[in-house]
Length: 186
Image (cartoon, rainbow, N blue to C red; front, side, top):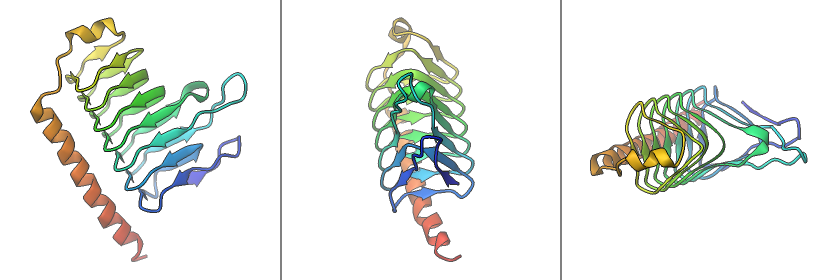
């Protein structure tokens, strides 16, 4: 479902993107080319700051927002998902938040008020908030990071973790083609 927010903003979705019919996109959202947005995802840009302003939610080209993902922002803060990035099933990205390019966010992970550097991997069931994750970092499953100081204990992305991220991107690009073809049958 595509709908306006109370400020009257309507999502802008590139024609090559696939948005599942059960997903909800509300407000000041920009979905770039070849994005996959899966079933029951909720992306909502509707809160304003104290001055009544709102930054957008931007989903970068070739990224995938999988089943049940929630993306929202507190007080109109920016949420930007970089290109070639995967946000896996049931994750929450709550802005203000910037997720770089070629990033993988694992199942059930929570991001809040943070920056995730390009090429980083946040594995399943992790929480990352109030920090800036450098490029090419690997945050293991079930890790909680609440400050920049806690990042010193985190090792860099392994080649195997990057390979997994790339395979997820490829699989979701194929899904876009398949689902777009199905849309034309109805």
